[in-house]
Image 1 (cartoon, rainbow, N blue to C red):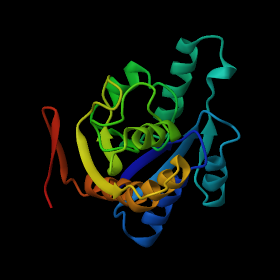
Image 2: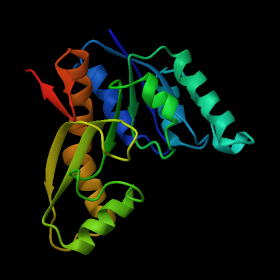
Image 3: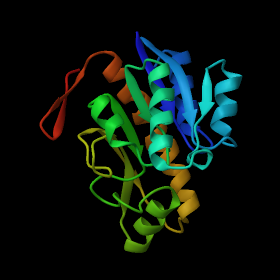
Image 4: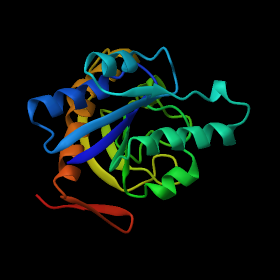
Length: 208
């Protein structure tokens, strides 16, 4: 059984996709051990509560320094003894010691086809604003392992989504969620739970 911790800052729509995936059998052999948010008002915490999933809030605002916060965040993660950490819209810089400890055991969902529209400053609506400004015809989402860079870890899955005439950033964001994010994040977790993903150098190899 793969024990996962989901880390999220906002509404938790990707968390909901994971909860649904586990319940519906699309994500096999997986248990959501806990949900962690840096935002005590995050609706994701309500989703966890409604589904009987342990959760907690660890906010940088509650500590005098980033070092203390990083230590408390590590404690919270470690307390759930996860096999895999899933960053599902977690808008806090991950401590280097956590990346090192959970090397190739931490994944992130990013709302673009990496390496386009990723890296520092590209998150949330900013990604979709930049894509529309550039006039690209195809966008999408990427699930990747987390390393020391921003959106630079080995890619696990990607899914393309077409841009349509008259799209606003908000409309495009919703379509990318529905047609890509909510599909490939549960799929990636299922593949990892099934032992079908391995990292070779800077890339992943998936055995079906």
